[in-house]
Image (cartoon, rainbow, N blue to C red):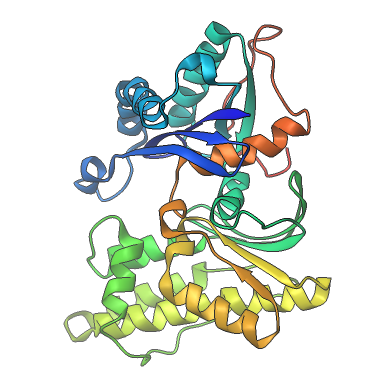
Length: 333
């Protein structure tokens, strides 16, 4: 089965062609980072307009790369949430139009399910159940993946997501957009000299607003004397330790021996190293996506769509036209 996947939830216009959920025939990503860099972050309306101008060309490039034509596509997987509503609507509207013209079904796909499925592309033999540590600009979740389409959230952030915290710390330190990678790069030059707060709940939730506020207070207090590299290093070490420790605690509680990393922040090398080391110490299996599948891409969406498709979670555009984007879509909905 051949799936054409579409991802447009933020500032990447991506289209992929995937065979049977795991074989990548094409994965084209058109990024808008150079455009939004001058604004210090993603401007939603600009992102939507760029998706509009890019999407048809990206679809053509994906088909050409795969050596296929529209007639070879069996169904379309498209991100319909969560994300920026205008950006999502571009992908959903294009998918509906294309599905109608080709008389094929759509598989509406959750963005976070896609991030989890990125691991299926890296590890062809990976199967649920497992624990997924999902870390991105908008999410910090611990998810018990019981089956390909069965998800149970057992922990999540109560305020800032870890990627959001990275971006806010980057602004405080005067680092350009995108902030997360810049904080990590600066952190490699520093040492752990700042004691920053950790938040521990009686369950497996996260909180990163406290450490973000602590970084802001230190920066305002020390000003010209601020040791930026040391603060970046201390911040990165503290938040990654909190993520990994909570994940290991949850796995012990639930009796799960397999952990999967997912989301944009899964590209963070410190987090990857800490998680792999902790998993090995506890005799757990550890899986992390190739770096090219960490950030937003359509290959992960097509992979997730494949498992929804074989479970019958499809949308016949000929029967109804009311498929819509949902900015705050919850996983499992």
